[in-house]
Structure formats: C-alpha cells, structure tokens
Amino acid sequence: MYTIGIDVGGTNLKAGLVNEAYEIVATSKMPLTWQSQEKLAEDLAFLAEDVIAQKGIGKEEVASVGIGFPGAVDRRRGSVIHTVNIPIREMPVAQMLQKWWDVPVFLGNDADCAALGEFYHYGSGDIESFILVTLGTGIGTGIIIHGHIWSGHNGCGGEGGHMVIVHDGDLCTCGRRGCWERYASASALIRQTRAAMETNRESAMWSMTGNNLECVSGRTAFQAMDAGDAAAKAVVDQYIRYLSDGLVNLINLLQPDVVCLGGGVSHEREENLLLPVRSRVREISYDRLMGVPSTTIITAKLGNDAGIIGAALLGR
Ligand SMILES: [Zn+2]
Image (cartoon, rainbow, N blue to C red):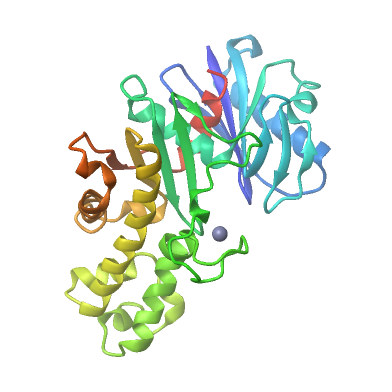
C-alpha cells in the first residue's frame, strides 16, 4: 500500500506518493494561488490524483492522504484552525477532500510533519523522542514524544523558536523580546554577520560579498572564518552559543533521544557547526551532572522531502 503526503508551503503545494519504505515514488506540484478554501481543496484533490496517475496505480492502493499546513490544525476533526501567510480559518479539509475521494485524510502542522519524516528516516524503531529544529527565517521545532507528534491541547504546541533566551532582547514577530529565533535563526545569523561587517571594515567578509551587504548569506561568516578572518570567527562563536542555549533549554526540559538540526544553516561543514554545537551543549546541559547518556545531536537528512514524507506518515 501507498500513502500520499502533501506539503502546503507559503508559495507552493507539493505532493508525493510514498511507499512502505518511506520513499517518494512520484511527485507533483503547483504554485499556491490563493482564491478560496474551495479552490484549495480542489487543488489538493488534483495533486493527490496526479501522483497516483503518474505511478499508474488505482485509488484502492492508497491507504491515506496526509497534509501538512503552516499553522494550527485540529487533527481529531480534520480541520485547519488558522494558518500564517495564507488566510485559512476553520477549514474542514478532510470533509472537503472526501467529496472528491473517500479516503482517510490526516492533517498536521508542517514543522511537525518534517519532524515525523526525519524521525522515521533516522530509525524510529530504536528511539521514541525526537526534536527537529529547523533554522530558517525563524526557528521551527517539531517534537515527537513516544513516537507521536506533540502539538499541545490546541494544536499550537512545539513553538520552541519563541522561548526567550535574552531578557529584554530584540523584539520578535510574536510580540515578546529576546526569542530564540531572533538570535539563532538563519535570518538572525545574517543580521549578526552584517553588524560585524559594519564594525570591522577590514574583514574578509567585505571582499567575499563584493562589498555589498545585500549579498551576505548564512554561509558568509563560516566561509570567512575558514579563510582565517577573526571578525567572522567571533560571529560564528557567538552564533554557536545562541543556538546551543536554546538547544540546551529543550534538552534540559525533555531529554529527548535525538535533536536534529535542519534548514540551510545545518548544511554547514560538520567542523564548523555540528561539532562545536555538540561540544557546547555537552559543556552546559544538565545531564552532564548526572552521568547519564546525553541527547544525540544530528543534522537533517531528508531536507525538503521531509515535509512530504512526514505528511504521508500521519496516517501510519
Ligand atoms: Zn517570539
């Protein structure tokens, strides 16, 4: 049997047909052009039918359809409560899709789906708690406990990016000051890199970006550090500390088997990111005092496919 996973992103709808080995065997995508909830349901149904047509299988070979949304969902009712970036409010997705196709439909939050995908890929047989931390524009955290997504009593749980790590720090989009994502997201790293360039006119980061602050990326500080630039190294060292502080907050609270880092920053060379983060976390996390096994910190392997595979796994 197959399952279908659909990832509702800010700009695209992406669907995949997933086999029992959790591999994507057919894909389909279309741009998200917002008109109405009815049109969205129609597009989701089209994508689901498109991936099975591509593989040349019948609907009876599909056990379920899972869909990840950027927002809060009510999994029991199969409804989306509220999304960010697109104006979905109280949309009974499962019921609407089943007008086209009478198949079990499961909903999840997109960060949670990505976590589920990476969790299964890592080897869910051996572990039961897993947190995916995605470093992007913000910080998304998907929490798996006892093999199940933890999304809170209202579908809004797992927002680790909005825990405060700097009291009275920078203002966050959520209205609080000093949230983790203001200091350790990819966007935060870019802001920190630009600020270091402004105060270090001699830094190699200037020549690397063609003397253009607009060309600064999440890689700039790492690349300049590799070339021996001291200002860049200071940016990276501080970033590792911000990132590790939030990770240790999560680890001290939940002591999960695994914390997995995802998003563009996580592709950085192991020596530059993963190893220093592991070492800093080990230095400050509570479990070191107890002499017990520590949380394993890894980087994501599925990348952009995690959302589709995780959505497809919602029904399993
Ligand atoms: Zn916040």
